[in-house]
Image 1: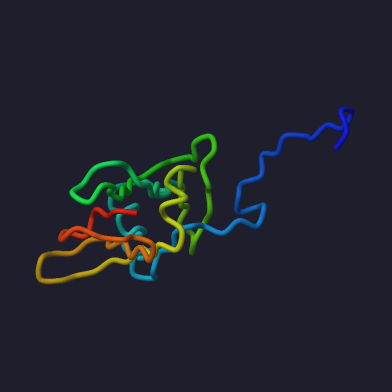
Image 2: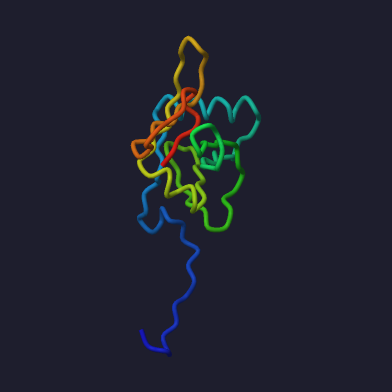
Length: 128
């Protein structure tokens, strides 16, 4: 590219550019997200999935309702559910599957991270 070449900025999402989502929801997780959106009256919202420092193993997962993507977010749709992932979290969520499980200690979303070196006993934090 020479000095006279210009590149137009793009507003395409990473999904539009052929980038895959780093995180995938199981069918049960999609069902439970849909139910939660309906129950909370948040039609049109999606889910922000992220990673932040903390927890007993060093990092912890976060999941919350979000109306629109933020600047720089990876924004994809899976089975009608909008997923938003910030760039920093994206690198820690590569290959992660989010499931919804019911067990003796209750029900909730479970993150299956093939890249985590260790996880804590509660399953909500990990080290990379």
